[in-house]
Image 1 (cartoon, rainbow, N blue to C red):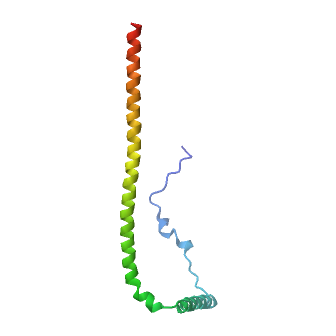
Image 2 (cartoon, rainbow, N blue to C red):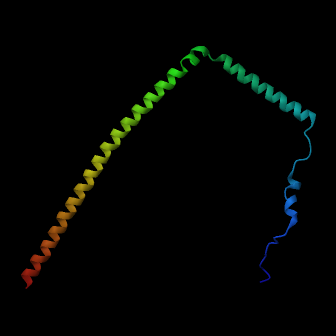
Image 3 (cartoon, rainbow, N blue to C red):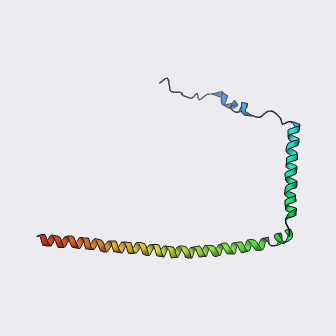
Length: 122
């Protein structure tokens, strides 16, 4: 019983649980300047990449048309998928139906053979 550790429910040190893990020190000015220069260079690089893209106005003008074409293609592909799945369902269900019918005939034959053997032995 001495190995059993029961937690103390009235422990008031839980209020200061993360106190030592808080970062209370401030960043130095040189580190802040380095981070701001990195952020500025990343922003300028992104603007430069946008500048290199040709025909930006044409892309924005065709944006709504492209979304409409995308929705039409998605709905058409969904209808095609429905037809494909229906055909696959028909093929698989026919396969299982044939297996069930063959199994039932085999059982009927087994039952018929048993009865004929019993009749011959009597």
